Image (tube, rainbow, N blue to C red; front, side):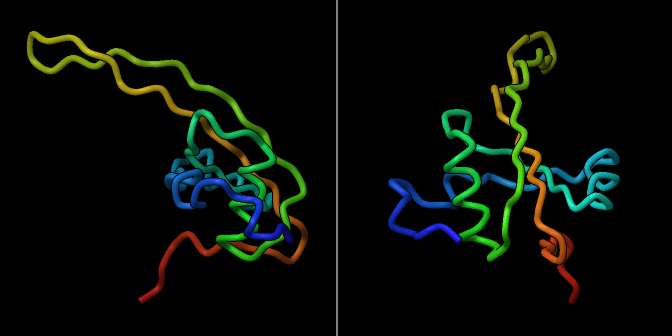
Length: 102
């Protein structure tokens, strides 16, 4: 685990939200979780934030910058904001509960 004094900004600012798509749910079988993260964060800070927030052991992180996409609202054309995706592989026996059970 990483010491929490490593952070210069809060963990909630680094990890924005999990991705719940068909491909992401298939990756859950391999103990891989997908998150949208801050575009300026690197793999070391993402790993530290995941380990601190969810109390798990991260073995591998893959990141990619996804391109901006066009978005049309009526006659106006704009862009969806740029974002970064991180696919996090956890150690055997560790899990993250993404689906809350009431």
